[in-house]
Image 1 (cartoon, rainbow, N blue to C red):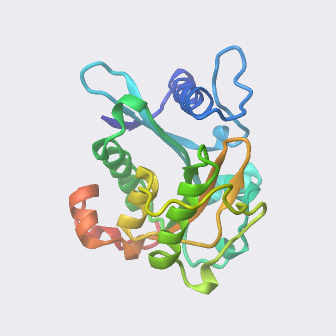
Image 2: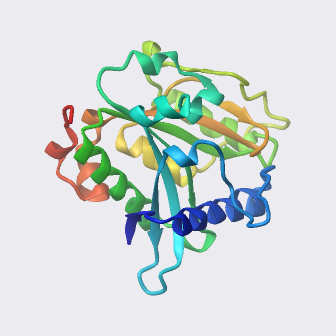
Length: 244
């Protein structure tokens, strides 16, 4: 079941899920406080999308949406702390950022990611957004070998045109070891490229989260029709939206 968090308790529950995954599982350097929650100054301006297991009601996935109008109130987009986002200002139409996406270890299947994207699709079609963007993270537990292998795949097939590039404020360094010959894309990055999103340049090295962040941009009108139909559960015509 996908829905928006409507209470402070639900938002806290999503922040605690984020903390368990980012700090507990991935080793991110996060000050979680007494309630062991991952929170930052952007949370107050975001819509928090959550997925619950139908049988138990357990929260198993979440992401957050920062819209263009709310970003003005927040002082900018979260991605602006990692990339020079001058390019975003030149995009025609409405834009929204998604971030802090995570899925419980026991529920990392395509079905759960699909459920999150169905909720996102309902939101951006209802409100007339033209672009969405966010960072897809690749872990660096092996020193960056797999990340660089994945980034080569992205550079070969999924790069945005030159006028839609962003610059990482702290680029990912070269790997410590020999790059992996072939590495599997993380589910979120795979979902982005399957929808038709493009990578907008080099990855950012997030040292607190020990990952490489790839900035992904999706033009809603460019969503792959087959993927929209089978993955998002919407007809291709619905992905071409105008201003609200």
